[in-house]
Image (cartoon, rainbow, N blue to C red; front, top):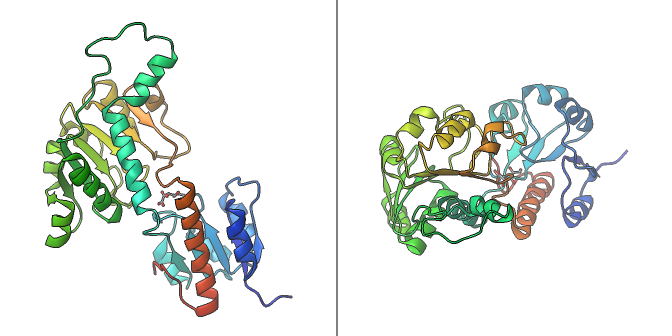
Length: 322
Ligand code: 8YV
């Protein structure tokens, strides 16, 4: 018998973070780092009061009913569509996420993907690696201009604003955005961003980047009809969540050159990727790495750990969602 709370760390995390958690809790880890099935997760959570999760672990009503001792789930992610927050609240389980610590890093990557997409970086690299480069040509891999173009942002939270600042201040872009609620005038001025309707955003953007949280409302927010509203020269970047874009419709649009190119870090049903996206050349594909710098991933794990420690020692978490 122990009086210390018991927690499950559902995926492999930095040893230093595990060591810190062991100072406070009885800790079970997943050293193989294979994602648990829902049944395995419920089994591992038996007798646990806390869970450290990632986007791979779903905390929903069925899981909560099977794990009555659970009191907190600390997500190592700012997005929390793997949590059914109303069900957690009803079950008296605290939910936490990791905002702020990944904002600038994720915005950096959004820009990296935008530039790789617009300037055809991976497409031209594949060409070179395949030994196809035997002469220089004036129009070879000529892409879309980034500086001075129109940057459209769907979802203007912390990361959207950080992308806007990069576009406006670093690349002299005209920034337009659409969001459920309009930003206050001071924030708009600081980001040099103008609020437009979703239709205007689609029609005007040279480069459209998606940074909106996933919800029933944002499911397939970009499908065939929305892509049809975009300029044929436009690019589309998704660093938000799979499911916001209808990947099958996007693959068709890319193949038919209805838009110039896309950059995707997230996918419907990832880690599976729609097979048609793997065969179209004008798409840059990355495996959900927008927040992946060592410093930021460590900061995310540390914040999730701090949430668990603060909750069990002081009764309140640092970044609660409910
Ligand atoms: C995470 C993310 O790495 O924070 C988020 O919402 O998408 C990424 O930064 C990923 O969700 C793993 O939990």
